[in-house]
Amino acid sequence: TGGTGITDETNPNRHTIQILEKMSKYYGRMSDTWRELSYRKACGTLRKQGVWICTFDQAFELPFIGERIATKIEEIAITGHLRRLDNAELEPEDHLLKLFLGIYNVGPVEASKFIRAGYKTLDDLRTKARLTKCQQIGLDHYDDFATRIPRDQMTALGEIVKAMAKPIDPDVNPIIGGSYRRGAKDSGDIDFIFTKPGTTHAHDLHYFLSSLVSRLTSTGFLTCALATPSHRRDDDSGSKWHGACVLPGNPIWRRIDFLLVPESEIGAALIYFTGDDIFNRSMRLLASRKNMRLNQRGLYKDLMRGPGRLKLNEGELVEGSDEKRIFEILGVPWKKPENRIC
Ligand code: DCP
Ligand code: MG
Ligand code: MN
Image 1: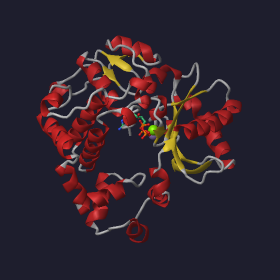
Image 2: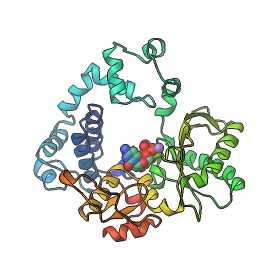
Image 3: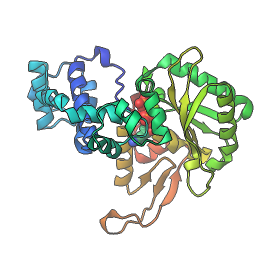
């Protein structure tokens, strides 16, 4: 996710940012969410600086940079290295974690299990491990899924989907969310959102999704399904589809996600699926400070909470369909998607 600083090549702090981003990812693999976030936020701060931040004092006075990270920024400026990262990169266990976490649908728990079982290579997994069908596909297309998708290819892939969607239902509005909507120069996957005027439930769009998937599969655009919708109405699992696709003439399999969103929820869904995830966190935190709750379906008020901030009810829907209104109600100045990188 995230990490796609648009100004990276020209930023005087790009070397520092690169190293701190690696630290953030390292802590992510260690499931140390707190440090993972701290480092990412520090990177966000450095991305906004027009000058090279090279001393402790300079760094320390910036937002989201505490003593520890300020010290590291100075170390990087002086030595060009960070010993903590150099050491981390020597840990064989971390090397394996990184390798195994790159497989679609393998999380930290599963990856650690593989390590404990003594597996050392992707080939070990291929021949010895028990994998789900999705993980098997993830393994078969390991390098493909690890390859970022350049923006022009994202646009081309998007056009193919849009052209197929139109005759199925011309009223359906297809939107590419995720890092693409934030203007990223490349993306990890394609996040498609489908909505339609007058809809209030994702299942109003199920007929559309099944038709779209079957047509795009028969043309060879979609190459596999990774998570198929169940048709239960009581949860929203039927509102998403995960799979892979290819651009004609290009052998690389790309990850693609389809999401069905009723018009009544499109504002909240656009915020959620545009991200980035840190921006989403900060919006949810703002909502909770106003005793409201923001999720991918809407903004809710009058939440009743018990001891330990335990939720007692869902609250009353304040806004779901209008992205800008949600910003307004939260008292946040409107941020264009391109600026939603924290
Ligand atoms: N999202 C989130 N929290 C998560 C995962 C996702 O808030 N743990 C939201 C924000 C993301 C959006 O969903 O922007 C899409 O998720 P992706 O994993 O596809 O992330 P991006 O599209 O932002 O980045 P990438 O280019 O790597 O796909
Ligand atoms: Mg994405
Ligand atoms: Mn995605």
